[in-house]
Amino acid sequence: MKRLFLCLNILIFSILHINATQITVDYYGVLTTSDNTNILKMAQDIFYTQLCSIDNITTNDKRLDTSKTLASAPNTDNIQTENIIFYAEITEEKTSETSKWLCKLNAYIPKTKKTISQTEEFDSYYKILVNAKDYIDKFLIPIKYTTTIPSNYPTQESKLLSIESLAGTWDGEPFTDKIIILRGGRGFIIFKNGSTMNISVSMDKNESTGISTINITQVGKSNASFYPALPREKALEYAANAKPIKWKFTTISNQQLIGTKETLVKSESNQSIAEGIEKSIWTKKN
Image 1 (spheres, rainbow, N blue to C red):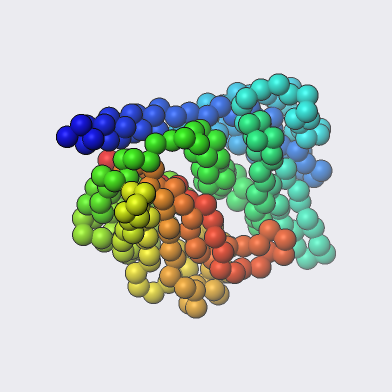
Image 2: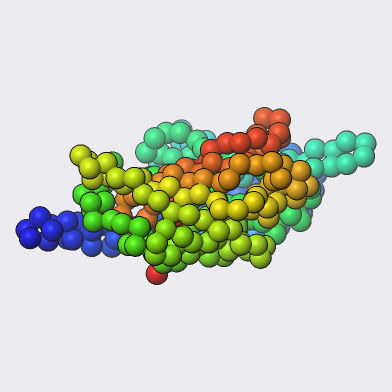
């Protein structure tokens, strides 16, 4: 009984800790070499607005001149802060027939003294503006949790977990409206584009450590709408022969899952599409 009481106390503490967790981001703006400075000034303002609207993030506006884009990247050597330093780089690549836009998000983590970056290609600057919140949120999700959960975070509560305890509504998967896990190892994901993916849920538990691994797998045929992060024409091309999307999570508590997602991804180097692995974090809403 004492052991159960201790585990329950740890579980309650952990849930409260996760729900209260916040990170602070210092926003420095957008760096660009494009001549479309007025357009990119708009993107810079929208990025700030969208950062402010993301849950569990406090945003400080560190732009020296909000009427202009960044002249150079922030010199992290001269900045004394524990906050995450965030800025974007937007470039326009033109050819004789077409043009495309590359948006690179950068986050410097003072605790690790490392910069994490991600580049996405867009057909137009308008698409950067429309997708700004999802793009930024998707980029910051792994940073938001891996920088705030202590290395000695308790895992004893995993011994109390079961598939039934995971039943409910979850959040954290980019471009989705709802993630529902049902009792009995089934569930579904509703995307913002209107499509629905059925999923199966299973659990592997290491009896010696009490740590559980949650396996979530797409059920049924692949659909191009399951890959909203890819350009639509690429998703249509590759979805027919794609393997089922899979998630493998380690349980922090029955309120949060942290792990990886096996899916189609776009290479930053040559823009090719292939099977790859992304970081993924799901947080229970109710």
